[in-house]
Length: 350
Ligand code: NAD
Ligand code: DAU
Image 1 (cartoon, rainbow, N blue to C red):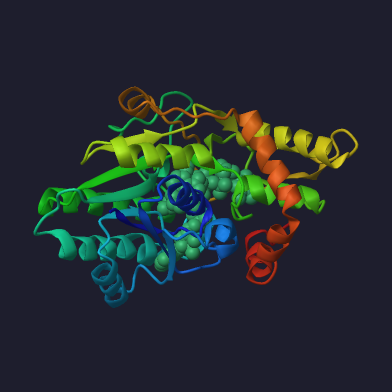
Image 2: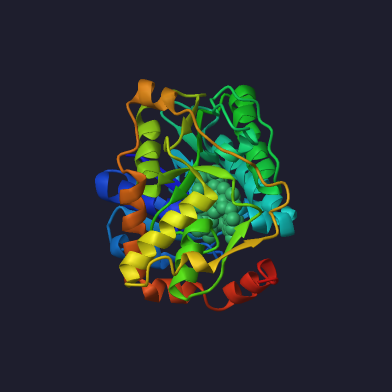
């Protein structure tokens, strides 16, 4: 029997992954550990909370005593580690909280896993979910491969790079069985509206300015979140130990082009006059250290493990917009309270 700890399972990607594992693998016991920060929301998992193979545990990955206790109690054979502070702009304002959760939290989990299993690591796995941002930035051409040197530019990506290094170091030093995946920008339902796509959907609904950083000529490689969950499932079951796999959408968009597409799709759905949302586009002060371009070469996972994205960007974006329009209660609940002061602080000039 697998006893699987998924950390950060109440967040955006984690909730899609928890749902997939709970529904597809009734013989696995899935433990979802989450501190329920501003980004974690149990509403994301309402539909599966009563499944017999699912258990939620509220707790903080940086609390060593608590983490040791739950490893001792539940004897997790596998860890899929997603819990993190995940927003670049927040990392610019408060780097230390990223060091705490992303670095110290990861090492705390590695220690507990090592303590429990170091006498016999057979059939055990520590799966670390990471980001393409560890590679830094690309110029106008080229792709990130698994051999690209780490060159992080933001406090967020530096903390994720550091956590990747610790996972690898525990593999080398203690023989801890691990895999790491580095994924590109995700989008889809349940993403917190501080990230580009849900932020702009919410602002279009409320006819608020769409704050495009700099000239908008920054490029990201977008992947539908459910395709990411499928990729994690694939690597979990078929990936080779001590390997890294890049995951990406083969889907590059300049921010400004993506925003224009989003505006057109939103205008159609809302029955707005043509181009009315585009009028909300406002160019604002750039993000410091803003990476110009990310693009993943996902050949390895495609050729070795047979994974590729299943949803086109137009389909994925359309489903995402529909979900936000049909779930105004979710959106309203997460955009009240603390969100308002975050928003004011981050976007005070507009
Ligand atoms: P998210 O911010 O939506 O969710 C993070 C979750 O972690 C939340 O539920 C939060 O409550 C929980 N958490 C935070 N600190 C915690 C702590 N100290 N203890 C326990 N739980 C804690 O993040 P996401 O976008 O779903 O990203 C999940 C993972 O995937 C992160 O590791 C991120 O670096 C990585 N990633 C994200 C993307 C993306 O585009 N969103 C792309 C590649 C990789
Ligand atoms: O590449 C993977 C990463 O993608 C993940 O590791 C991160 O957790 C995730 O947050 C995401 O990081 P980005 O910084 O790329 O995502 P974000 O949605 O914040 O921004 C996407 C692009 O849009 C980026 O070029 C900055 C720009 N942007 C963002 C916001 C929030 C704007 O122009 N205006 C905005 O208000």
